[in-house]
Image 1 (spheres, rainbow, N blue to C red):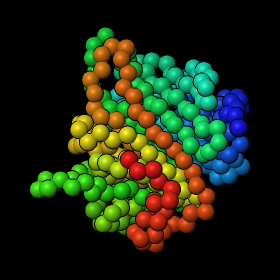
Image 2 (cartoon, one colour):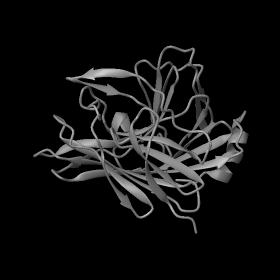
Image 3 (cartoon, rainbow, N blue to C red):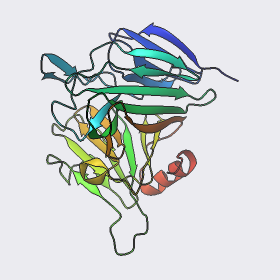
Image 4 (cartoon, rainbow, N blue to C red):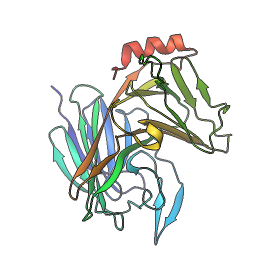
Length: 302
């Protein structure tokens, strides 16, 4: 049986980081900022996350940097609350088969973000637990929001809900003010919404959906990234009731999942879990029938 190794490394210009490996896949997480997961891929293979993102904005006296990779935010989105810089060192401790990363308490907002990563010893599967803890002296209401910036060149697949609801609607779409319904990057199918990145289009697109099937996928470089998440059909979600969102602008494509909205007491946390896996030898499909074959073989249904 393989074991999960954890070692401290220097990663590009991000400084100190941790590498988790089981000999099949590896992950890299930051220690000098974040927490951010900057790499997920097969050993010596391509990185399915982009760590090249460079967008910055001023928040108070500090600068928030998009950086790239996978990060934890809290929703609903608002400035400056959501964009509090994560420029400080991260505390970490080893867990059985993984690590726990904890940031310092965010000033002004008074929340604290935690990530727990668990790497399966014998496969590409990763479990990521996201927690936002309330460090205020009063209750706050929010959603835990996980965001992955994917490497450019890929093809995203999002399932459309098909639960039988009689005379009531079963699909809930949220579109942002800047989103165009006829955007050439998006395809509105019968079973799936697909999205591709186009660096020549200089305006953003974002859509959210009640992802009751609780998965999404991204195909790039002949490999398939599968993201599973929790979805509760009885819960209230942010952004007009969506548990999954995707955003693209120039060379950025984000896969985003959200927990239900919840009021949490002081020192209480709201948790949200994603499950990742990678699969080789997958070409970008040309139609929904080809998508069906990929999903049937590789995707765990929610």
